[in-house]
Image 1 (tube, rainbow, N blue to C red):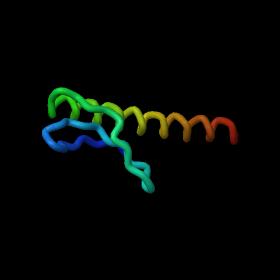
Image 2: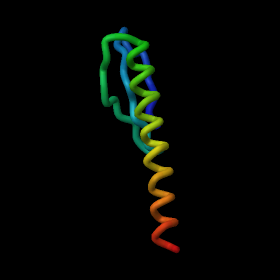
Image 3: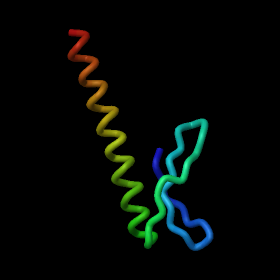
Image 4: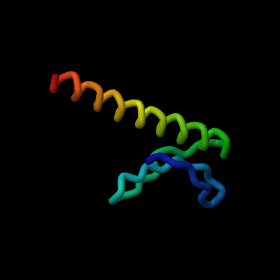
Length: 60
């Protein structure tokens, strides 16, 4: 999961996979960090959906 945080006046995007958490980007504004985290998460969901559809096609 991607999300944004403010840490020591820095605006960061973080990736959490359930076991680990990694700061992946530092951006100049909070709004930009929020938008980047949102877009990355939407891309993640799109990829999951695409993968499920491809698996269904292969099983038929």
